[in-house]
Picture 1 (cartoon, rainbow, N blue to C red):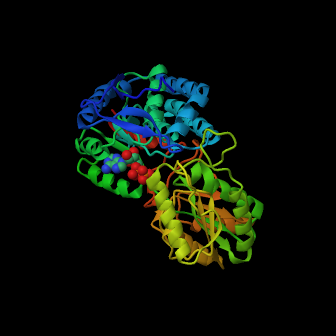
Picture 2: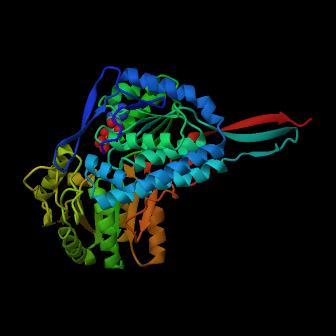
Picture 3: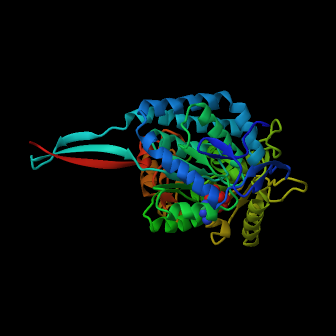
Length: 479
Ligand code: ADP
């Protein structure tokens, strides 16, 4: 990792912050600092904006095939460097190496997918109903974009935005999370190697997110914000976008219900729960947050889930055989501890876990809570940790009402062997995505996104590129 860049990437060059500031990046498994990265301030943001604005016109006019081939080359380089990138992610955010390798493949796939979409941006032509005018409809890049990404999937959240932006012909300023800047900088180096022209992508890690982001969003030159993060920060950014009417895509928080009906195949339900809860140590917006299990199978489900969760090995992500790495930081773990303590105070039973281990690193054990009081704080808070909270229900109408009783609507999971019920309940859930007898929905070829306060717009799939394109209609009289 000695050759991983640690400077800002602006206009195709690696540079220090104008004021020389740096920010430390630590390994959550040990607490040790692994790198000091240039810490951008407002002046650097301005330079990155100049570079992105300056490159926009030429990039928009670059042949779609050329843009496509850059993405395809970058896809291949990422796959070739899977191990190196996986180690980098594990070092800066803690996930076990096997999961990090999985994320590298997932992240790379966005580049392959959008390399294929770049050459399929089409328009249409026709005669309007009055017979006097023609309509030529084409699609244009929206313009320079600000991309803000979180720390939980440092590589994939970057490629999911950069891929369609490149395909559409947009230039970018990427602001990664301060906890995980190294993966984004490594990605910039790969894109440069793949032939991305200078200024098309600029990367500005910063500990001063507000000072960097706000002038960009209020300045009138950035035309699009694509944000993944908390609903709270999303709301703030939407307000900042209002003055200059910046287009936005928002991937915000979730509070996923995981519903197990009495006719579910419990093996499938427990397998699904392990993925929906434990992927990325529970630090995912798609993580199952509320387990609603039919009263007749709740005890059996809880017993089996606790057995599987209790068998997971917790430890540093680089160690062989480890299933569960550390949480991102002390603050993240303290939040999980508080939520569990609150649920237990309100009468929840701890079937497994629930105790913070001694020693260094931000570890927290896989935990299953049964008989959770619906008033518990973890019912309306994203847990973002390895804690499964089980509640029981009696009938379909009741569980649909309770599952929808939240301001969020990203994803829901349903387990039932009845086709009619599966379709009926899926249609009634107020969510953007449903996992039916599966705990995993994310796929680069499918539109990812939520309804209600979980966000605006979709990423990935055929529609993912639309977020970075505008229609232009040309009226031409029929002579
Ligand atoms: P989390 O709680 O998962 O860290 P956040 O919403 O706080 O989620 O962070 C997601 C991303 O938003 C990160 O890159 C973070 O630095 C960035 N961010 C946080 N506050 C602001 C802000 N005021 N302006 C711009 N970006 C912000």
